[in-house]
Structure formats: structure tokens, C-alpha cells
Image 1 (cartoon, rainbow, N blue to C red):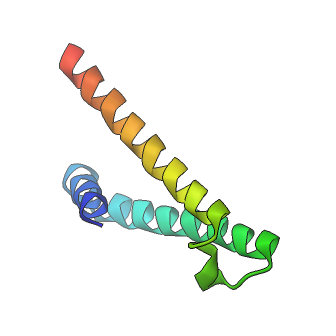
Image 2 (image 1 turned 90 degrees about the horizontal axis):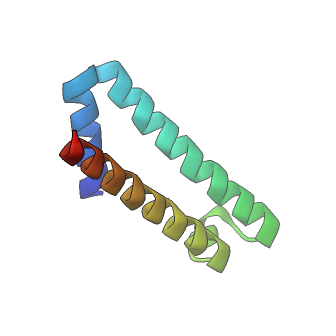
Length: 80
């Protein structure tokens, strides 16, 4: 949650409140859409979808892709 807050703060500082709101909404929408799909496929409730192995795998993929993106951006700024 701290990293997400830092990203939203950076988006607000750099691009304004509208972009920060849109990033927040899009992130919540994407995560809840994936969890809803996992819940429907596994025939479990939405609350149980995050603890389901498929839901956990999606969360790991999201964190890994975020870390890879942050690393790529950091390396790009370092070399420019």
C-alpha cells in the first residue's frame, strides 16, 4: 500500500489530480476484474478469490511486472 501511495503521489505531483484519480480507478478496476474472473472460474466468492491459488498467482504477476517496470524506468533514467 505504501508503494501504491507513493506512485499516486508522484502521479498527482507530476500530472495533477485527474491523472492520479484515473490511475487509482484503473488499478482498482483491473485488480477487481481479475479477482472477479478468478472467483467465477473457481466458483468461489469474491473474498475467497484472493486466497485462491489462481488469485495469488495473479497478485504475484502484478507485483513482479510492477517491479520489472520500476527497474526498467530506473535504469533508463540512470543511463540518460
